[in-house]
Image (cartoon, rainbow, N blue to C red):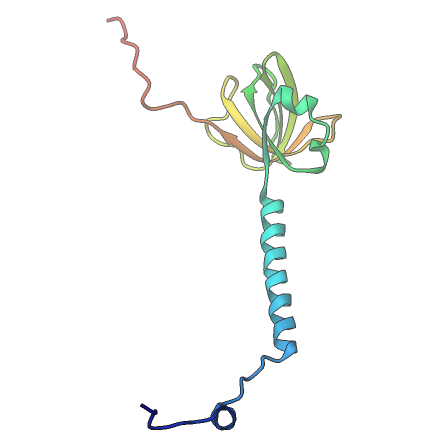
Length: 151
């Protein structure tokens, strides 16, 4: 049996629509936009990435001078010195029998006092005090068991 319509390959070529090609400039523009997006994501995550260290780890860190770091420690007794005119607070934090002098300029949390665990974020040059841009004080847990008082 023979098909009702017998179209030869030459006739098929004449009736078929030619494929449209995407201009090369569109491909280049797409690659450029994709590259820019990848760079922006990478640059943004690198600028906001912060290492979290303890005081001994900061003293042993060799490449921490070039980046922002967070350091955790306990505020030492008698080390807090405030300058109310410039709103600068200097204090020392300790962890594992190593201390770190800290200078912070800004508003101090209400619960900031000796014996409180703090997290400071900033830069350390290797000598001199740690320059903090952020000071966070960890509040004691509200779920600690209460000690009964004697009546």
